[in-house]
Image (cartoon, rainbow, N blue to C red):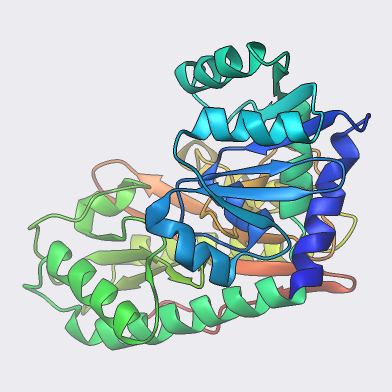
Length: 362
């Protein structure tokens, strides 16, 4: 396992052009990705040949046990202690993630380091390199995501027993999260979307005390976290009955999703996948009612690189994990979204999801 983290850190060191430069990671997820310890509010210092994880007393014992390929330091005053280590390493320039640190926190570090002759830089180049490294998953990560998906699916299938007229959206969400934790999840990947009726036209509708009614669509966007890694799936079902219009729109979305899945392969552009889904919906006359990107990357975070949109020229590579989730949303009527999570492979893709997609009427 240590070699996995050593390889990640070595990849990150590509940004260091001189031996007197170092990186200070402050984003909790990035710190966890490169150190193996996901549960701290600390920072990680990476020089040309050494790595340090700085945590406070609350996390020190656990970090010593679980952190990989780095020396764990229990700090008393973070900026001063990091500065002291930088001085011992003869570090003269320090790079921070541009998108992961507030201006106030950056200025705090910068002022402390300037007193010791250490220059601080907020680096979008560092952000891009981290994103590039993280978006290619190794076998261990893929296995964890598959486990998260399996947990989420089992919980979803259990919860479907309670999707019936009179049930509250919020009760369904609570049951779903309960079952996910019961089956081994740390938590849900995000605030679960369990919405019914007209609210299904809201891509990110919020569950409330609204009750399911006969003839409604019910949309469930759900995911579990297992050992830090997320899953993400959406299914739309009908309750007791479905109108001809509901069936027609559902089948258009299903066709769009299946068409897009066929385009997912190594070497394809993210925009190719988006266009494959979007063109089916446009040709059916519903182009104006599909207003979001077709998908996104998934990993330690529920939304990460790459973005699967018509604007994205990112080339899909083996090991990337993306969602494909087209939808049609008719205001004040209903909406349909179908989402699978896929791993790009050398020969196509692996679908993590093992749930039916044909319209189910409960």
